[in-house]
Amino acid sequence: MSTESSYVDSLYRDHSRRVQATLIRLLGDFELAEEAMQDAFVAAVQQWPVNGKPDNPTAWLIRTGYHCGIDQIRQRSTARRRAHLLLPTELLPAEETLDLEPTTIADDALRLLFTCCHPSLSMEARIALTLREMCGLTTEQVASALLMKPTTLAQRIVRAKRKIRDAHIPYAVPTQEELPEHLPDVLQVIYLVFNEGYSRSTGASVVDISLTQEAMRLGNELARLLPQGEVFGLMALMLLNDARREARQDSDGELVTLDAQDRRLWRQEDIQVGIAWLEQALALTPAGYYTLQASIAAVHAQASRAEQTDWGRIVRLYDALCRRFPSPVLALNRAVAIAMNGAPDTGLKLLDDIAHHPQISRYHLFHAAKADLLRRQGQHKAARSAYQQALLLVTLDPEKRFLNRRLAELENSP
Amino acid sequence: MKYVALVYYQEQIINAMSEQAWQDLNQECIAGVERLSVSGHYLGGQPLQPTETATTVRVRDGETLISDGPFAETKEQLAGFYLLEAHDLNEALQLASRIPPARLGSIEVRPVRELPPKAEPQKESGEQP
Image 1 (spheres, rainbow over the protein chains, first blue to last red):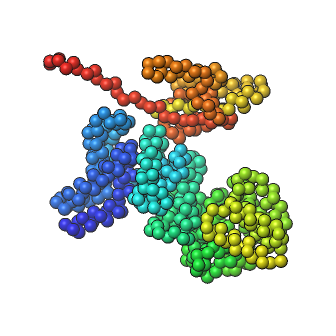
Image 2: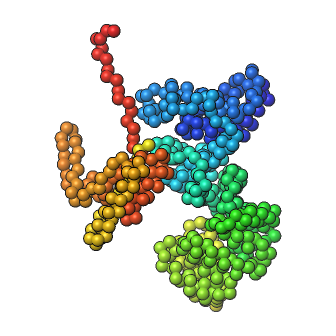
Image 3: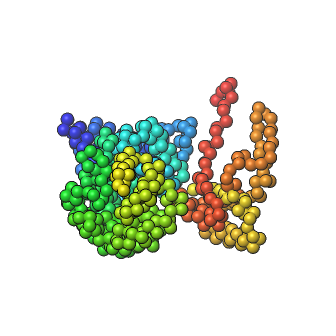
């Protein structure tokens, strides 16, 4: 009996998301599918100890959940405000004709991911829905990972689910022709989840959910279901960045820049895995946004000392990125790379060229980058004023302390 | 699935247009409606006269109040609407992106709301079967 129920526990852990993803497709409604999935597991706990466990537990849970969902639709009175928006049961597939082929069920996870990452939802809702529905985190876990109040988050999720249903956001895997338009939406959400965790790996480590791990798990699953070059590129980028995690702060928790990091702390196994992903990505030309970014991360990862960094290659990669995905932030990074590649004056001039851009003039890293180049050039007075400008704009404490340290070093020098 | 695409732009941008540019835009809209009709996505729609022609009506405590101007002063003004038939939001967004004023202002895409079924008339309390 108790082994049966612990079996159901592990089944819940392993299959509840898949069962739910399929029930959303079959019933056409997130909330209804979640209730139906819960009902199916309750039925399993009651029936399996008596009747024995079915040959295909997932299919059994889906069929039972579907049956419960149809009952729910029939029971809901029309007085409920939105009851008429549910699909009428006549339009739902008959229970005997349900498509429960393993490939269809696997694709349901993809359908769910594309729906959760739909650009018509707010970015906050996309991230929250993806963590909750795809990663199986509870609302409380997602709220704590995103530093939000659970009630606020719950409301956002409810609103997003209603919009998915009422505005008919599709629950579908894009066709091969639609992929270039829609895949970036999904990759962007996964990368934001990763960065949300990565930028927070300092300090407030009260959170027991690792967003970086969740993002990489999602990326892995996506790579299995949708083996596209950019998915591999994103996996490579996340692994190569994450490999440097322990070196990004010193024992006092202070920020350490790339050139000053102790490279022995970089996790070589992750770098190797990241480079393997990158090679897979590069085999599928043309290299996209994440693949190019990962290529840059790989150049850093492969330099055993900062002075050995192949800046020429980094400049060429930024050239390609800026040509295909022009943005002021990439132009900033390209200018820094050019300066580091032995042309500091050109780099500084390129920085001046973009200084007036509204997205750049208020970006603390622009002023910090400029200050750093001026400092390397020995132009201490100009460097100081750029650091001061950066300090006016910076928000995160570790970065603020870093800039203050650099400024203090310059105050003490002639 | 029906969607309404509400077309908004700053009327001052339109007012500042040359006569030729304005005529071209209109012709482009006519061609767009033709395309949408042929493909079966166009259910209806209409461009609107500028907001200076708008009058707002409210009824409060049974009294009708009439005032000059649009319901709300906004940066962009409602300039017209399309009623579209689309399979899902992706298709509706794709159709909306081809509405010419999308380049000048913005198109708000909203699913129409289906009303609940008409309520059955209440039976008289004294009625016997």
